[in-house]
Every structure is written in structure tokens, then in C-alpha cells.
Length: 205
Image 1: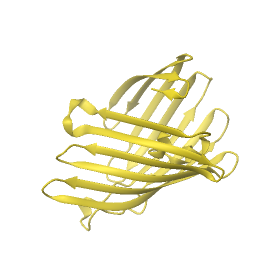
Image 2: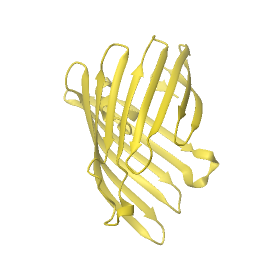
Image 3: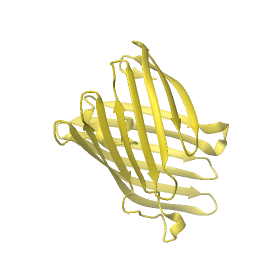
């Protein structure tokens, strides 16, 4: 279901109604709060999705609503699109809103290798007429490798047109049926991460 926020082509592979929520606070800093919720509904004509997210605090915050769609175009190729409403609010200064969109593809090259690409705000739309208020245009290209049923390796390059490119890599290993171990790293900035996932039937934590 979180393909709603990342690459909407991934929605094409969902076979049942899916929903998820998340919340995070980075570095225990009040202004770096983020939370979101997503739901995906597969139909005979493709999968529709809705995402809601919030970033910031009372002094500065950004809300995002995105309507999404993903479907299989061919046996191995999936496509997706998102239509986004973004609102940025700063108390005592007001709020600005804008619409934009994103496009994604996902190609199952083999049973073990999947390639994907996504672009957000390709037309470089802005919140206001000032250049500094331009919405970020972000391009991503990634690959997933499944050497076995228990192991997943992923890599991705992300390029914000206003910043240096970022490289990401992650690995997931299924220790037992219900427990997954995960690790990752990014460049620009350099960050290492570690996590666990718990699979409880229809519920994933």
C-alpha cells in the first residue's frame, strides 16, 4: 500500500484491499515529525490509491494528499500515476497550495530482478511565482534482487534537481516465518539504518 507514496506502479501488484499507517520523528527534533496513511483498492481496471501525509509542527508544516492509480500494461510491465495536492502553512505568514503529479514504471526483468523508475513534479510547478518556492522535482531509478525466498537486496539512485544525487541500498532477510531483519544506508547525507519487521498474517509491523 505504501506504493502510494513511492512508486504508484507498484499498486498494480496488489491483489486485495491494503491499508497502512506510519509515524516517525528523526533525531528527536520537534520539527522533523512525519506521519501518513495510505489505502489501496484493486479493481478489474487497475488499482486505485489514496495517501495522506503530514510533515512539520505548529511553526511550519506541509500536508500532502495524493490520488493514485496503477495497472499492468503488459505481463511484466506496470505503470502508475499520482495526482497531488500540496499545502504549506506557516502561522502568521499564511499558507500556499499547489497541484502537481508524478509518473512511475516497474519492470519485472526476470523472476529475481525488478527494475523501477519514478519522477515527481516533472513540469517543475511552483507554490508561488518566486523561484525559491519551486516544488522539488525528484527522479528515482532503482532495482530489487531476490536471490532467494528469504533474501531481498535493493538499490536506488534519487536525484532532486536542486541537490546532489543520493544513493540508497537496503537488505532484508527473513529470519523465521514471522520475523524480518533489515538494514540500509544512504549517501548525501550518509545515514545507516537497521530495523525489524513482524509478519502476523494480514498485519505487518
